Image 1: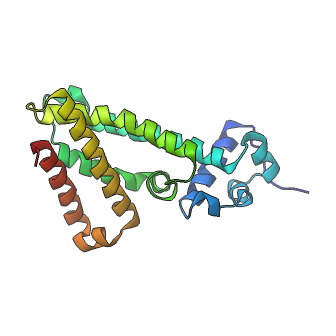
Image 2: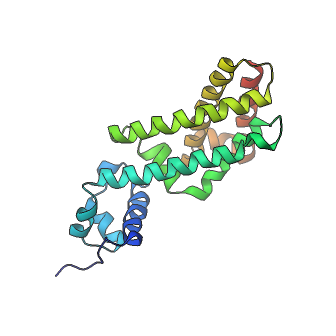
Image 3: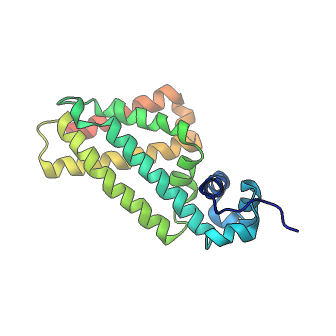
Length: 199
């Protein structure tokens, strides 16, 4: 007889997503068996399949939920109602550090899910499309000389720096280790500020 609880209650569904994200952070989604997700969530494999057609659906739901949190955090950190100007470099550095509170979701979003599934990549693009205008508006507030089009270009560039930085941050790669935590964050701030100045 199978053990585990039904997934029907929202809390169990969330348990499956949470278990999936924790496991997806340890390797690519292709490497994680559905049975491991079910076991980690405390449900049967049959119960998991009753509510999720595949592990890709579990990944996609967890991925989208983190994407929403990411956009909300960027909007809050770069809130235009806080005043006419913003120190964008330090704000981006704070957004890098914030990811420490978001593991394993950040690891899945930025590292282990890259090229995992076409729907995940579509969700990643949708998140980027929401972040660029937020960053563009922050760039315009930080440098009043930027045209609206240039502000969006700077916003997209800052997002590229952010995504590259968080990959190093999460993986604690040789760049991060070489600079150390403080040096790494200072370098992120410096790069963003250079983009704002156009150099």
